[in-house]
Structure formats: structure tokens, C-alpha cells
Amino acid sequence: MELVHATTESPVSGLEYHYRATLNDDGQATIDLPEYFEHLAHTDGRGVQVTPVGRPFPVGADEPTGGQVRVYGQAGRDVFVRVNARRGDQAGQFEVERPREEPEQTEE
Image (tube, rainbow, N blue to C red; front, side):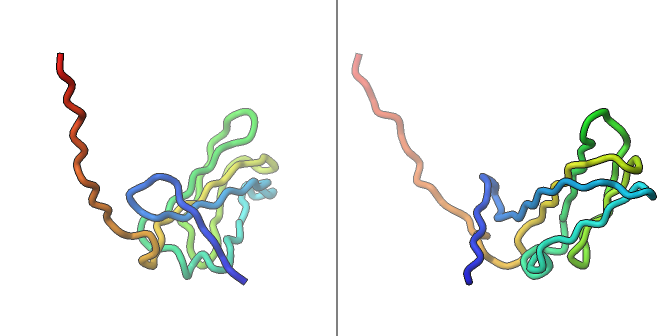
């Protein structure tokens, strides 16, 4: 079995996961991240974006840890959740030096 990840345009190689969750009667939901998340994600700079589905309401989230993330808001409502992190290994963590390209000279 082989796991393949791709990255969006960024100066670092990142991880990004998208979810939709329903908040329970206490106004929270716990999302289980992929079991390999903790092995791939750097511990610094992890982020969570929570967006209400439908009419706006206050939302929040804890930092992802232990392979999970907890989100908060209005009980019974749905939220979209995006978890992102920088890769913790060295995959894709390199600098590229591009040669400078001079514009063509045109005679007038």
C-alpha cells in the first residue's frame, strides 16, 4: 500500500484535511484525524479553520493534538472544518534557486 500526498503552491510542504461535523448537545464535536497525521505533521503551527454551515454563529476550535481536533459552536448545527499543518519530515522542504531570465531585447 502506498500513501500519496500533493501540496498546493506554498513555500513549505503542508497537510490539509477537510471535514463536515454536527455539533452535539454540548455544542462540540471531536474529529478523528487520519491515524498517520501525528507522524506527518510538525507540532508547531497547526491550524484549524471552522466555518458555520448556513446562518452565521460563533465557532472555535482547539489545536489539533493526539490525532484529534475538537470544535465548538451552537448545539445541533453543522460546521465545515479545515485542519492544516506543515509536514514534520523533510518531504518537500527544500529551496529552489531559479536562474534569472532576462527579457528579450527588441530593436526599434
